[in-house]
Each structure stands twice: as C-alpha cells, then as structure tokens.
Image (tube, rainbow, N blue to C red; front, side, top):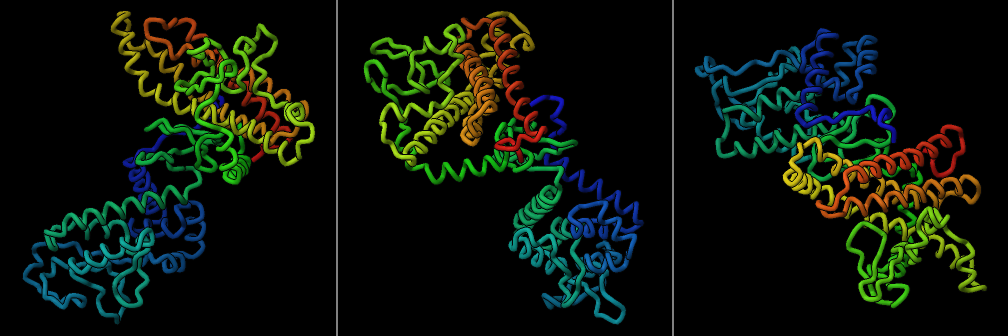
Length: 474
C-alpha cells in the first residue's frame, strides 16, 4: 500500500486517557456544565461529540436526566469534619462525616444520598465484577438514576479511608474500571481501533480512509476495517469466505499438505527450515521448488517462465486421471491455492523471526565494518519488506482462488509471479551470513521487490475503484 495512504498514528494507553480527559473538558466548557456531567453524557452518547451537542441544545434537562447526569455538588472530604458523626444507611456504623460521600443527586424532600466511603468502596469493587456494565453504575440510593462518574470512581477507590488490607483490591478494581473506560472509548469510536496483538494495549487512530495499518508499539500489521491481521489484496468479505472455506476443508487439506516433502528426484523426505522456497537436496544435490516441486532452473525470467508455478493448470488433474469427478477437481483446485497460501504463511513466520535477529546482525556488521547505525539500516529495511511481501503473497492465493478465469486473473497472476520471484531472491539475500551480504544488491532488491508489491496492490485497488467487483470489493 502506498505510504501516502497511511493516514494514521499510534495511541498509547496514557494518550487514550488524556484524549478522554481532553474531550470531557471540551464538552464541559462548551455546554457550561460540570465535568462529571460531561463524562456521563459522553458515555451515554458513545463519545459522539456532534450527536451529544445536537441533543443537548435541543433539550438540556431531558438529555441530562435520560443519561443519568444529575450529580450535584460532591462534598469534598475534609479532616475538619471529623467531629461530626454520620450513621451510614448501608453499614449502620457511625463514621466521621469526612469519611462519607454524596454525589448530591437527591431531590428536594428525599433522604440524603450519602454513604460511608467504606460502603462506596465495597459497592464499586462489587460492580467491577459485573464487567463493562460497571461504567453505568448508579447511586446506591433506591431508585436513583444518577450515574457514578469517573471522577467519583477515582475519588472513592483512591481514598486513604477504608480497610488498609483491602487497598490492593481497590487498586485492582480501579485499574479494571479504567481499562473498561478506555475500551468503551475505543470500541465506540469508528476512527480508533485496538491493536489485535496480545498484551500490546496500544490503539491506532485513523485520520483518513485506511485499509491496513501498523501498530507503532509492536509493529503488528492489521486491517483497520475488520480488526484482523492485514490481508491485502483480499477484502474483508473475501477473507471471511476464505477462512470459512479453510475451516470446512481443513482436515482434508491437512491430509494432503504434510510438514515434509519428498525430493522429486530421489524421494528423500526434506524438511523446510528457512523462508526461501529454493530447496537443495543434500542427498542427490537436486535443486527444486518447494511449492511446485519443479526444477529450480525453470524458475527464472531467463527461462521465459516468470515463475509459472503460481498459476493453476486446470488440465493437470485431467492428465493424471481422465475420469476425475467435478468434486475432486474442485478439491484439487483448492489444495493448489491452499498449499501455496500455507507455504507463504510458514515463510512469513520465519521472516518474523528474522526481524528479531536483524538488530543482532546489524550490530555485527556495524562492528566489523566500522559503520554507523544508519549505514546498516538496510538490513532491517530488507527484512521489513520481506515480511510485508510474504504476508501479501499469502493472501494473493486466497484472492486468486476467488477470481474467475479471464484476462483479469491472468494479469493478476503475472503480477503475482513477478512479486513472488523477487521475494524469493530477497529472501535468499537477506538470509546470507553477515560477511557475505552485498549491501548494494540487498538495497536494490528491497527497492525492486517493494515496487512489484505496490504494482500488484495498485492494480487490485484500481479495478475495485473502477467497479470490477469480485474478490477485491469490500
């Protein structure tokens, strides 16, 4: 994808909290209301500023009552109140007035909605156990519609009062509440998505129309539309159909696709332990392609083949068996694409391990060549380009599986073959020992391979814009 299309940026957990606070302050200032009201209103309107303003200006009182934003003045706890005692209607204990809290939500003539801090702490800790619905917890008074604002949550659970042995429990409860609050802010905002990587905690915010983004914290690529792993050139709908197809056919496919393959010349079992598909049999010295098992010498531009093993030959099954059934032919077709899809998936996993080792290789080269850190960046750039190409190639086979035969598919397979052959070359160069790395050659193949990648994706997106439909449309 073109860099100019990547109008997005990463958002850390700290920044998320700051953004929520900024939006809350902005709403409070615009509507001239307390921040407690603003935060509760934003929760009710799913953080939609425009919708909130439109409803509020139409009928402020009705909007606040419906949302539960009816807090009054929250009395601050002060040691000066220690001489005044208060009997909590929940714990039935007499406590200093400074150790109580009311959100000021009672109506004239109602009993005061005041409770001891300990009662509030027990109540909110219990509410967190209900999950994300704790964001809409209400005042403890019977029938009260007042929502407990984020400020009250923090005021209560960070209070120095209460059982000291339960301090860790209260902190854990507040941390969980904050996570629910951040998740609500992100989940309800169509311009922000969580990074899907486990334990990352960052989000990505889009400025324009984005397809695929990269988390700035953990470098995970994912689709901004569906939240799954990046899957260009396959559409989100196409990915869903492919996943369902693989799920239905997985047992059959796994029976055909083994972890090892036989050398086509001597039949020795060979295990693939690197990303490159150029295989060399250690027993008979035969060079062949891991994907199609054909001679490696036939896989170059000089042969006129342009890496032909990427294309499915519908006549191949007929040559093996003239009377093969339609179902068997369809299974053969699926296995063809699934095998190559899985092959690039395995190569992608290996390429990801190269990323982890790249900095070590860069340090070695820096020490041996007496170069600066910038001078060895080409190694990491090559690995990053390789990872992106492997990921795209993986999904090109799912995309091609869904494409109907015709000129469009022929052009796509040509672009696919060019990207595939250059990716294989880039893989070979990137896996060389540090001493054998040719800087100019690696930089050139990184650039050329990236050019073929952009050419393939640009052609797919061009067809989508011009209304070709098919697998590329979303």
